Length: 387
Ligand SMILES: Cc1ncc(COP(=O)(O)O)c(C=O)c1O
Image 1 (cartoon, helix red, strand yellow):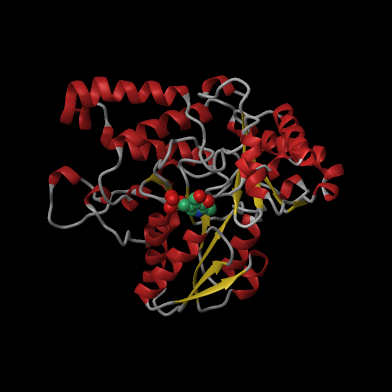
Image 2 (cartoon, helix red, strand yellow; image 1 turned 90 degrees about the vertical axis):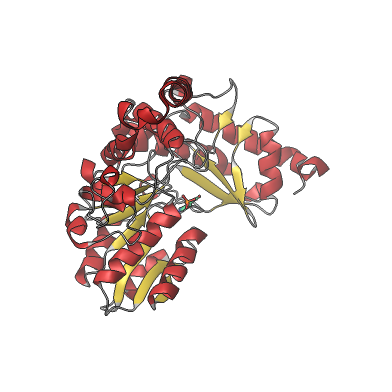
């Protein structure tokens, strides 16, 4: 628990790290230093003097440690959406005869939107299946599979190894969306046979609003795939300004354009904070927090109109817990008035994220008590909390 390393006001129970992680104090210090000492004092010279050119790859190396990958298998670049498109197009290019892109139905919408636009551009068909039904839909026409590790609504944590093994039988790589895992869950990409993944920098990683995302390409896949948006930043020596494109080594070849240095500075600080905080213990703490919340709510759930949608078994759950209630948006607003920050998703879902770095089991219990108070008092029906 290193709450003091984050800019969080005393008394605030912050359960929205699954949406936007709070600001690490180190990120603020590094940003100020970059603006003053580098951008301010040394301008364009900072690309080399402050090694801005090496930043995205270096952070990729730190993230690799958090997701069980090798340093040169992870690159920070663009957004999850853009990285997903790159991977789908790259895989389809080496599976020209396969016509189907298999996508988890009801996953975070961007994944299906991107799959549909890639399919339209590449002349493929999107096949949607619920996560429990993905394996059954695999066949020799499946070019690639897109699914998330932890589901953004239910927090259900998928068995990565099982799906990778089943997909390997038809030689179709799975692209894992790690947005709701990285920084809060133990992820073992290499050990669980994952070849490709993408993930968010602004949720549990706390890299800041709009922080760049990351892309994971296993060494085996690096030998086969080409970045379909082959820009100069993914080329071997951008400042040689050669006319012929030669890709950079490793996952860094999946960079395209100029990286957002200020955002990378914040993300690097955030990832350093996590790396210094016993990352192997993160998942245990997150699940303990979630269990404390679930246990405190359970005896009162039915009576108060709540339906838990997250798995009760902690091994099957990510770092947040979600409930349905007809007045979910108003309840979340009423909790905010009590300094408890969660979020809601239409029509009736509320989510509470228990990021292990700045939330304890005692915080989770205090949050549960606040939720029970709000529900029992009926205050959420007040006009001020109406949508
Ligand atoms: C599972 C998941 N994937 C992708 C995204 C969007 O990522 P990006 O905005 O970087 O494209 C989100 C955002 O909340 C998400 O929850």
